[in-house]
Length: 131
Image 1: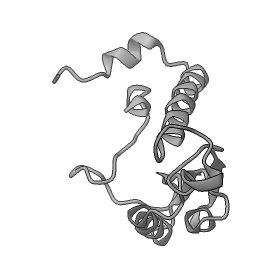
Image 2 (image 1 turned 90 degrees about the vertical axis):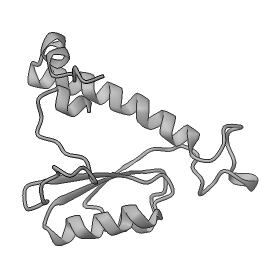
Image 3 (image 1 turned 180 degrees about the vertical axis):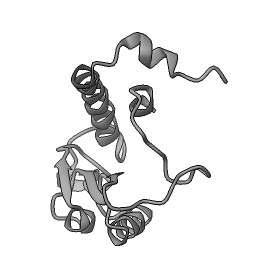
C-alpha cells in the first residue's frame, strides 16, 4: 500500500487487476519459517516468469531462501522456532517476525520517500477516499 502511495507501480497477488509477472519485475515474498506452501508456489511461478524473487524470512536455510534470488534475513522468532529451547519470546507463533517486518517496512518507506523525492502531501493524495 505504501509503495503505491509513493507512486510506484505495484500489485498484490490475488487482486483481480494484478498483471502477469515477467522479466524486469520484482516479486516480494515474506515467509518467516520459509516453508509456507503458498509462498513457495508463488515464488516458483515468479521464477518461471523470469521475475526477480526477493524474500524476507527468518530462516536462512529454508526452502524459500534457496528459491529466492535475494534474501533479507530478519532475525526474529517465527512458528519455526516458537517452542522448546529455540523460543525467544512470550509472543505467540510469528508475532515477533511480523512486528519486525512492520517496523522494517515503515523505515524502508521513509528511505524510499527520500530517494524518490515524493512529498508526504503527494503520498496522502494517493490515499483512497473509499473508506
